[in-house]
Image (tube, rainbow, N blue to C red; front, side, top):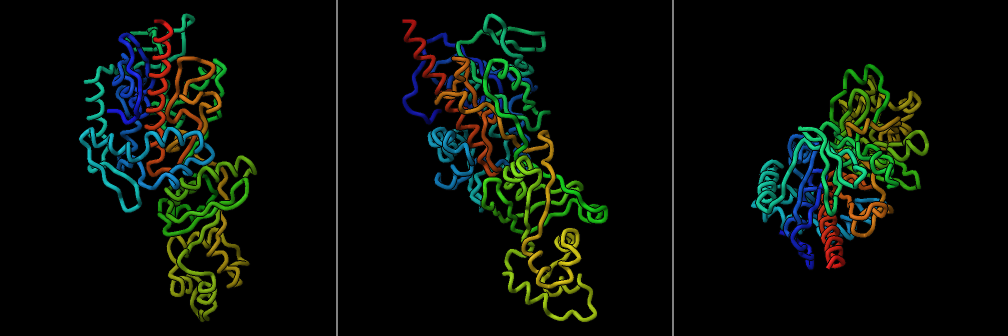
Length: 424
């Protein structure tokens, strides 16, 4: 099944090599196989879609149901480049594609879209079955090593190194996160050697390091902080504010709220050497109410008891306040109220890219034409997370991987069709 109209069907004999058996590569392979191409998919891992499967362990969030005017800005400064691909293979078309595999979906209360069983494995099994039926050949434990002098692909296979000739190549090798599942960024120097512009890979949707006191670390590491509103000053001005929850770790902070702010936190640290993150510990209380409650006489009660009885502030939230507010703040109820509503945290650095959910950076869109073909390497296309974009969790990452895989497949079909016409 394809959802893009007016794709050419190739004459017999056109052979395409797809490097990478994640969502982007498999989607490319499906589009190509349905329009006459002979498709071989190569992947360094023992089986296909390993990162896709792990991402679905806690509940496979496949896309998001929000309308495109809200959806596309999730891609930040690359939304204009991604918009044509996502419009052609948007969340509605993606859901229809999943339904055609025999997998039902539903929209959760947050607007996120999930397979009915909440698992990735049934979807991947059905997809691989359909791909094999359409003639797609999958070659596992085949690591791409670049090109031979004759232009063929170099592949390290179980039986030794081999060369593969193809009429077109699609690279869908992922970014730099979770390298043990295949996204190890080994492709970066191979493309730079061919004069392809690649933006440095950076962690995205990641945790951050903070320096906690030993007392705070021992008492609160592993505890969730909820609900709070977090705000970060953006390097180019303004504030990014989100409501949610996060987890205190032994070395800092992580979790969905931190991931949503991670791009701004990371970029602020890169620009200024530090980031300014502010927590509203009582997001449902206006400042005036907090001030009024703190102003009540506490008599012989400790400040901890006073905070708990008047503001219901206890546990890890009270611990954060003790950890981060100054003695002067605690000596002045006005200052303390402002600290509760805007408690400053100072993340020092993002966690390593190997721990991140996804990565930013990759093949620059300026190095690609509108069909995702590399300008420096005609006949070589790129798709998925190895492109220079990032997005928050919530289905946006997978949607762009599927959409760019679909677009790369379409690009190959048009390019090969034009080549075949020239040869007639």
